[in-house]
Structures are given as structure tokens and as C-alpha cells.
Amino acid sequence: MDNRDEIIRTQLDVISTLINNNLRRIGDDLWGDELPKAPEKPADGKPQEKKPAPKAQPQPAEQAADQAEALPPPEDIEDLKAELNELIGLDSIKKEVNNLINMVTIHKLRQQNDLKTVDMSLHMVFTGNPGTGKTMIARIMSRIYRSLGVLSKGHLVEVDRSGLVAGYVGQTATKTSAVIEKALGGVLFIDEAYALNGKSENDFGQEAIDTLLKAMEDHREDLVVIVAGYDGLMEKFIQSNPGLEYRFNRYLHFDDYTLDEMTAILDLNLKKGQYRFSDDGREAARQYISDANTSSISFGNARGVRNIFERLLVQQANRLAQSADLSKDDLMTITAEDVQAARESDEKMIAAEKAQQALIKSAEDTIAELTELAKNIPVKLDLPVSEEPEAEE
Image (tube, rainbow, N blue to C red; front, side, top):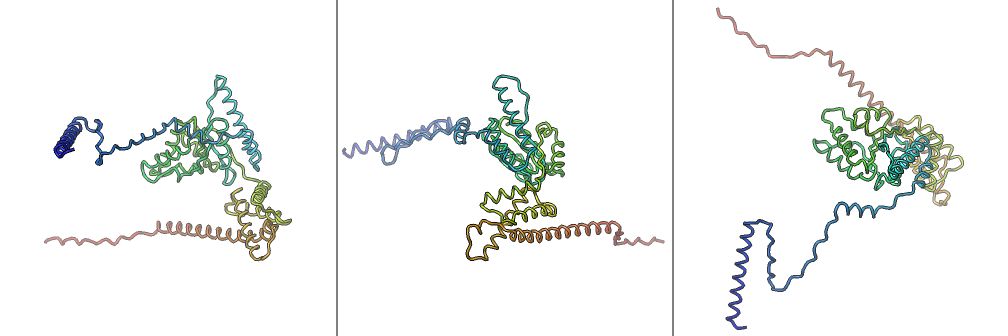
């Protein structure tokens, strides 16, 4: 190619570029971003490699299908009932849960046979003292509901007031909605739910309750809510709102564990941890549980037993650390000496708790007395006295 042809080709390229730029500007002025832009010519003149089209994002229905495939299959209801019945104590709870299983099973069968069914609320109120197994039963209930086809996932989301209520206007609804979204397909377990019933005008607990009630209606096919707390406080909480009374009509009361049941719980903890009592160790531990349950400020049923178990392990470790040669049996055995050392440590802690409580009570009484005295002290105001002008003669 001679110089003349090269110059002509260069001029044509410049003219083509100017025309394309002008057309693009006219299109932008007329159509904005809606007009597709022509692909730019690469600087090196080489054809650009065509990039693969981005993979289409799955739609909500497809996402739900993928998640369903990832979930393990529902557990066999008979296995879950056996697991429930093997729990220590909780006889009245086991009976109520088995009744509920039967009701849901028949309810589903009537639906499958095109028979009329009565609306059945699966939301529940758990009442009882701390450490009586409320969270444990809530977790089993979530799995049972999935086995029966009531819930799609069967997981448990546990929160209290701090997980639902925010400190500023408008934030509580968002915070509560996020927790509800996480709980969809499972059980939302709200411990000490009565704390949502705020007393002050600036409390946002009512906003959390309103958001919760709306979600229970919108997602009634795939969300179960369980609220838990002390007996009297939970009754007042439910009765404080007609919406709560309407949706929560199934109450399960959790009795305190008996001494035999708490001793059996301790035995189970030792067995799981590969420990065992010496001949005199178990009776000493039983007496320890009995005394702690009556003298401690807050023992806490199974929770208190768990604390005793951990203290026994600490004292056993302190004793064994003094020995150089230890057998497997030594490492497994909890003795009466370990129990006594744990009791002495526990008694010191209880004494410190009582002293602290007495100090707080004394301070409160002193403040009350000073407040009463202050009410009877006359207040003298030293105000400047203005001198009246002398009358003119």
C-alpha cells in the first residue's frame, strides 16, 4: 500500500469516528441512557473476546427450592417422641406435647381428606422458674413441627428483649423484623417476654409487640412463636394486649425439678463427660444439691446442677494437680473430698452475695430515711430585701 492509500484510509477513519461521536451525542440528547451504545473499536484493532453473559440470579422461588434441597430430611416423629420421653422429669410437659402431636397429626389427615378443620394455634406460652427446661423443650418442638410438616426448616431462634427493642424511634420495628426474618420456617423463642411490656412512655417494647403480632398473622403458615417467663408475670403480659390473648392460648407450665430428678441430671452430666462418683461421693453430692437448692439466693434447677457439676470438676482438678502419677480411674473419679471443697467454695460465694444484698438494702434504707428527713426540713430562702423609698414630705 502506497502513501496515498494510507492517507485516504486515515482520513476515512477520522471521518467515521466524528460521525459516530455526533450520532451518539444526538442519541443521548434524545433518548438518554435508553439508546444502546455502539461498541467502541479497540485501540489495537484486534477483535475483543466475547465475555459470557452473567448468570441469571435465582428468583425467590428458586432460592427457596435450593434451600429446601440443602436441608436434611425431617426426623421421624417416633424418634423425636422417644427422645422427649427419655428426658428427666417434665412429666406434665411430655403429656401436653404428645397431646399436641396427636392433634396436629389428625388435623393434617382431615385436611388431606377434604374435611373441615378447626383453626389451631401452635404458638405457646412457657411458664416456670429458670432452669426448668423451657429452652430445651422449645428446641425439640421446632424439630417436631418440622417432622409434622408444620414448619419448613425446624430451627430455633432464641432472643430476649435486648434482641428485639432498640433505643430510638423507628429502629425497633426494623430490629424485630430482622429477627423474625431469621426465624421464618422455625420457632422464635422469646425468653422473659414480659420485659417487652415497658412502663415508660418512651419505651419501644410495644412497637416490638405490634411488629411481632403482624408477623404472626402474615407468616402464620411457617412461623411459630413461643414466649417464656415467670408464671404471674407472663399471665399479666398476655392479658395486657388483646392480640396476644388471641394468638397465645396454649400454656405449658414447667415445674421445678425434684431432688431425685436433679441428682439424676448430675449423674447424666458425669456420664456424658466420662466421670463417675466414688462410693461416698454421690451421696455427698446429693446432699450438696439439696442444701444449695434451699439456701442459695438463686439456685436455678437444672442450671444450678450444671454449675455444681462444673465446680466439682474444678475441685477434682485442684486435687489431682498435687499428684504426679495418675491413673485413668483417678482422672474419672469425683470424690467426697471434691464435693466438700466445692461446697466450701460455694458457701463463700453465697456469703458474699448475701453481704452484697444486705449492703444494697442498707443503702436503700438510708436513702429513704434521708429523703423523709429532707421533706420536714424548712427551706429558708435568703432573698435580697428591697429598700422602699422614703415618703416625700
